[in-house]
Amino acid sequence: MAVPRYRILALDVDGTLLDRHGALRTSTIEAVARAARAGIRPVLCTGRRYRRARPIADLLGLDAPIVCNSGAIVKSPGDHGTLWRADFDPETAAALLDLFHAHDQLIVAFNDRPPDQADFRVSRFSSGRPHYDDYVDRNREHAEPAVDWTAEALFHMCAVGERDEMTAFERIVLDACAGRVRTFVQRSPAYKGTMCEVVRKDAGKWAAVLHVAVLWGVAPEEICAVGDDVNDATMIEGAGLGVAMGHAPPAVLALADHVTGDHDEDGVAMLIDGLLAGDVGPGRIGPGAPS
Image 1: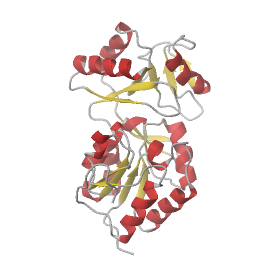
Image 2 (image 1 turned 180 degrees about the horizontal axis):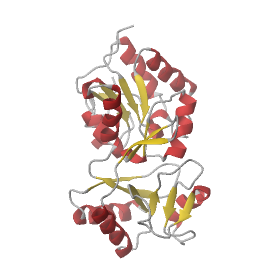
Image 3 (image 1 turned 60 degrees about the vertical axis):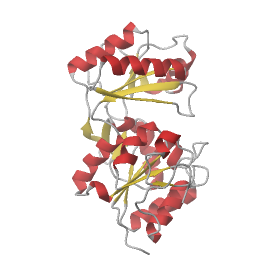
Image 4 (image 1 turned 180 degrees about the vertical axis):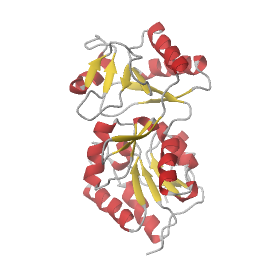
């Protein structure tokens, strides 16, 4: 077995570790364990909130920090502590609240609280808007209506609706808050609607992974990052080895140094086996052409 040149393996969850049905395969679990035994430290990097990310870490046997909320926060599963969080400054938070209200977008704003408390605040329940209500209803036991949006930190805000509506709202947010925020428009197969996510400009999965890397004394070129969607783009582009899943959209594939199999082919296990054999390394590979 070759000596791995990478010390961190940053792994997206939905669409990367999990297949199209949301299942974590035994072969994936075993591959991640092989990477860990070889000295490559796996780190979950997900759009999920901490409550939904931690069970995946448990199934994989990981106790490393978890990058959650599309890279707006890093949590420690050992004590549920917060290692880093990208709060909006008060002016930006106020501007975003005004934009959501002015354009009649109901808000989902995530919390940083102990696991036994509500994960997020919402504008209201039972709004009559099917995409928004689908998201809120599926998570109702962990949600609460907001009384005062400014009562605690805002660091990850979302609107939920049809894709065209969310793309249009994304343009509004970026035009109004140029240079202050980063946005992601994406849809999880678990929900009916598409989300327009808003985080601080310097947030994102790559920025969050770098905070973990500093804690561990790992250089950026010693990180391998793999994902399949737009909120994975910064870490795929920034890592020493950026890997896209075979089913990733063209814009993400174009950023990758390597394209692995898709989530139904256990592309993560394919990648790890290649890393451990010394068969995968830098050298850009054309989009959609798994090596």
